[in-house]
Length: 531
Image 1 (cartoon, rainbow, N blue to C red):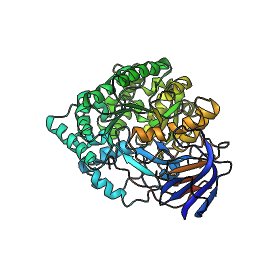
Image 2 (image 1 turned 45 degrees about the vertical axis):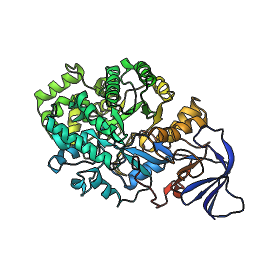
Image 3 (image 1 turned 45 degrees about the horizontal axis):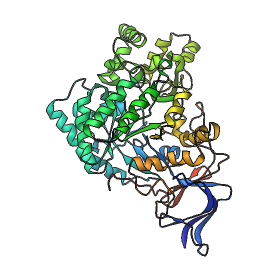
Image 4 (image 1 turned 60 degrees about the vertical axis):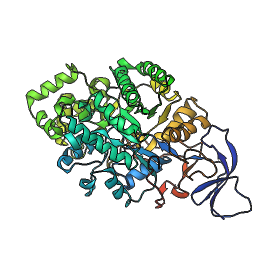
């Protein structure tokens, strides 16, 4: 007696095997191929006209910050995600130092509208795991530990090198996280306080990661004018520490830099040829989303977001910041120039003053008859610095070049703060969009190839055992979809609409999503590294 049988379905196994019609059964949370026709099942799903494949693996997730919340869960599972890699770009809810918790919450405010009352107790990964054990998890999550969070715990937002003692404290926090099952460390080198670190600091922390067979993932120091320098720094860190490297949401931003990512791919391929293990993740859109305040040079954020708001209330400082954004005297990731000014910066969400939501800053400024910089500064002031913006900085040709690299996997980089807040379309639609965009519309891959890229490849790269393929005895994490219908159901104006064509999502053998609704089942698990 099986738990589930999916009959007469097109099987795409994640291994690039040509698709074929057959039956797939589930028994005790595991896949059974070629099930006995004589045995029945508690649930029989008619797969006629449908496809079945391994559950999608989100290689770049921020879902850990609001883990277990219905809005986070729906955004993931409704697009077929059954496992994700959380803790990216240097940000995690652990390890916390209660003395600097206010600074950490400023950094993490982009990810959630409400922090857990227990967060002050997340002083270690082990403590955080105790918290997650009580959550209703629908999908599986594997964790990185965030460098920004570690630095905040030890040094606050200080813009300096750590002392020897502080570096040892940071290494101890990394070691505790790795000993308890983190898969590695992530960095966010455009964000406070990660932006203030140097290469040597990252190397020393990654040497601890090496001891546990972990990985280094990085939102690099630059994805525009100095992209190649940033790639070389990332490779330098991983090579000196002898750890696998993942370059997060690889891209080249700003029209003047379009095509530069192809030169970067040559550098990456050369490093792989000499023995390095390098993965790239990508979201398949010409825009990204992050803090609105990141548009401002980081030197004005060393006193926290509250300190930045004080600056913005001073007319002299406003002029100074405006000048630095237009004609910078110091290098930083200049989202204003990369987006071709305020015409390419779209306000996704604001917690308090919501008038600009759904408009570019340029359009909003025209609407109210204000100078665009004044409109921009006032949006930040009225929302206490906590806004999310979508930046249109990329081109399609670069996106295609990156995804065709054999070491590129797909990640949402999705941020969903609540059911009420707005987000980037990638948060709900990345994986159906990837199938539709790369395979159906542009024929860059066969169906079997794109499914392998979003299932088995990330499972292999990130050492996620028994997932990413339809094989006997593998975990029954599966997606059943309608090929003709599969695609994103959302837009920039309505980003929280669920995807089309996802008929069933199964995690650990249980149906967790059907008829565009969560079923209420919560079989998800925390996947510990090297467990």
